[in-house]
Image 1 (cartoon, rainbow, N blue to C red):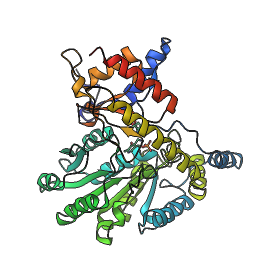
Image 2: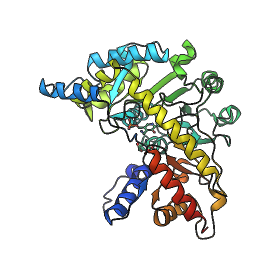
Image 3: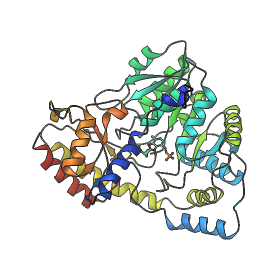
Image 4: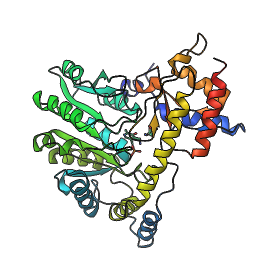
Length: 391
Ligand code: PMP
Ligand code: GLU
């Protein structure tokens, strides 16, 4: 019988983050009061000046196709932001606007990978890298970080082969919240330079760093490194705009051109109104972003202590993003074995939704998103502590 599905798509697992949201919603639909710490998206509203710019664009009839790579004004605005805020030299020709960072990443893999090309991913890793690389017929090569979730340069060096095309770096990190210090980023970048491979730097959480930690763009480390680096970012987290779907890549011009052709033949431009809205985000103040970061910081401090007060749990204090990635394997039992079973147990018994660490490459952990009010985090942690007494 003729196969309905292609081999390519059959290789892809559903997004674990969205799967948790679906499970929690199904339970909510039955009337259960579920506290969601699963999907990572700020609980804050998109700032008013950004919404106003969208309304204006709509009223002015800015509702037609735009250039596939994004409107020139926006690409220029992003290039200026990269220069001023990230110390990355670039021009509008190096920028392509896509439907969220997820789309940027997919298009990069599509445009850069030949079958069998190896891509080094540092574990724990964000769920979609692995599947997107497979979708582009590349081969993900997973290299573990240390217990504090920091990269181990020697291990990365050992993983390089003649087929290595790029190394993916994500700091501040999803799922661990780790921020890689400048020296570590430099060490990874030097390995890339020595071996003539590219670096893909996903900097979606750049504005969320705490307690003296600093974010450094990999492409800012040296002009040589800049030439070998593709930076991905989005408005999704920084401006609480996950649903608007605007992300971007900063890349060598030939790659931007290839990705524009890809977009021109597949999705075309990002929603015209959303593009106008993010111009306002770039031009406006970062006060709302700073307030969000302050709230995440407060929640993170509380949640780390609360997790560490549970017997059998060990939680690193993250310096960035808005996730915690506690080790919970001390609580695994014959019946609740592994992070998936543990998350199912928590959903059923504590009515809280977390994402299993196995989806991010580390089954000893679970991911907890601090993108909920402090009140619900307090309540959720209490329920987790209570329910896990039975294990
Ligand atoms: N990279 C990382 C590390 C993420 O956590 C996410 C999820 N927001 C994305 C990329 C995708 O972001 P977007 O919603 O802009 O597609
Ligand atoms: N990046 C967020 C997360 O990891 C949103 C979901 C997704 O894009 O997969 O939860």
